[in-house]
Length: 601
Ligand code: PEP
Ligand code: MG
Image 1 (cartoon, rainbow, N blue to C red):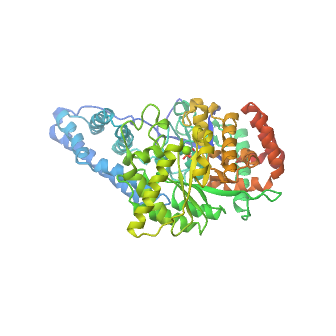
Image 2 (image 1 turned 45 degrees about the vertical axis):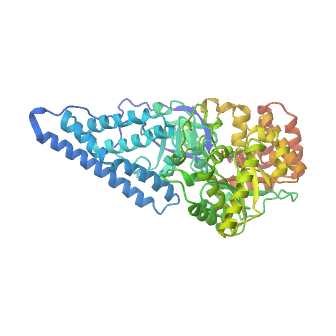
Image 3 (image 1 turned 90 degrees about the horizontal axis):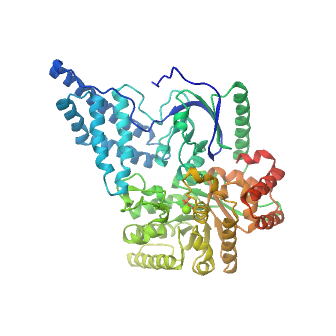
């Protein structure tokens, strides 16, 4: 049941946000509230004595039981899904909270001793628990408040007979609107009824945005105040191609957007159905086109879309939403699965990149969410600090999977020779340990580094002789070069891939690699944007690794480009000083070559 708003305003209004996942959705708003639902709070009439208390206790226990049953049912229903493990970890964490004996006991005490009605008793009990978590020094434990709030919301909704399934089971398709969604929220969204989502917070290369793109879910982030500007039942047009939102559109708008949606869909269908041809330019220059994946299962789609391999396997998801660190064997099996699914094509596995925006409870450390987490104990730094617990077992698993498939290692966030030498030394010790254990592994495994810290690009000539390849991570390279938080919507206008400083660092990296004869890939989101394809190829990139869903579009773009002309374009771009002027040139070039539909990306 949804709240009714008699005074509801139905005038057409427009808002702008950051388009992070293409597609057009038209449908009613479903607001995902952050706080508790409005619920009655009163003391039970003392004259009714024990019977009122018993009734209230009964109501609470029934709602508690219903909440557990719902979670178990969702868990079972989703168990066969693609993201089953992640979802199950989240749901298990929520179930654990509900099944805790204190959760059963605490509200009962408030009902018995303070005559609180059940809703109030639940809120009072949870307020106490949340205050304890809020006061914790450990940032990860503080973050647990989010889970407790979600569980509390479910319980209160059940007490009041309201819908309690936040992301699934909608009777009709909806567009979700919330302050923010975490990647784990997204995994719980019902793909059949959620048409798209809008959030107040977030940036273009946040993990939630990347995941939305990979799920093909239209999304706009960074629309400040949107949760108060729309209401349940408002009709929303979400244009994930250019970041426009229209609330309660008129008939003419609906017609325009329906047409646009049809064009986008047929553009996509045509793209996805085109038979896979080699990704080479019109004049025969071959560019390797690989996929970025998050889970071994994603490799299937990469094969279907004709990827030349996996250019970036982000391993963080293997550590998220769970209570223990994955064992070496669990990792080995996941890596092997990906390798086997790629049928002999190479799989580049990035060692753990946790920290910064990607957090996992199992690897918490004081200060993990400090004042500037992206600059803190993150990625390779965290691995080197926790080498015995995390790094060595990951390296052993990768090396072992390499005995059976073409696997490569990629170290993230390397900022200089010191970190690289330390990492290579540990790798060599890990190889020795596998020899001692008599386990087969790839002793000549190829090792590369992400170039995503400006320092690495500036020192690329020092790093190149020590590695087999570079992979440029523009998502972070842009953030660190321009001092723009990739998650902060208030500075998103400064997050500019076409900034000359970023392009110069890419160019420096390419030059250093060329003089040491090592290949360079680019695996940031820039590679998934067709506006940049010709420029990147013209600059000398030999490999692009893109969000799986973008493989057909980027292949089509590469196949429509003339390599000679793309080199001319790159020269022209490098002479320009302003991102606006570079973007203009690139869009003009793309429209001239492919027509405006190509900007659908
Ligand atoms: C990058 O920084 O460009 C990258 C590919 O890594 P991530 O987005 O996982 O930080
Ligand atoms: Mg990165």
